[in-house]
Image (cartoon, rainbow, N blue to C red; front, side, top):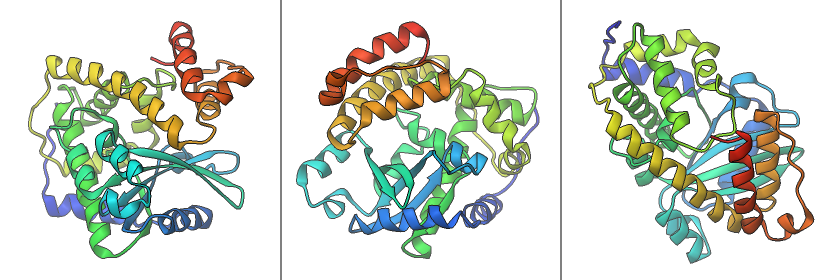
Length: 288
């Protein structure tokens, strides 16, 4: 296997240059509007397929909103409690024709969920990929995101199995993360993430000296926990995400090529409708 070598300073410099690249003005406007809805907002991070492709029209953008803490971020105490117990809360957003969803995490949870000790892959698997800071409160908030991305990349490569090349190790790591959640994307998606910008993953990987933490037993636990938490988060999202069952149907249709026809009662009762929809998707192989 090719050995990665580098330093914390080199890694931080690479990430800082990456995350501060300019985003589409529509993205930055949406991010600023999202931040304005939550007191104590620290940063809004743009990530996902729309960032990779640059395709925004007709798509749903993905953001993480990082807040100082949950009690400050919400007027309703139950939302703060839900975010603390099962992070993140996920909300829809739409402005000037731009549709998005954003997940809310506190600074403390961002740090906890990007480390190798996290019980789920959902945060560090996404922050190990290229992201952009679409809005930030100050330089301290940007430094927080730089640390989170470096920590996430370190976690992914540490938990990934040995491989002939550094890029193969990245691919293997992402493949394992996709198996640790219920996902609608095609089976080739993990590899395509790396292949979209292999030079980036080479640069970042060579700046990391990952500790060898790969364990089949650990990944079995991550798969069990991750799939269960996916169900729990879908159920919780029905309380915060208007039209959540429609979004689920759209995402499955987009990624898996499986047409989903929702019944009127599934929209009236999205939690029940989503839970009944899920076994059908599993049987069809639309989510795995």
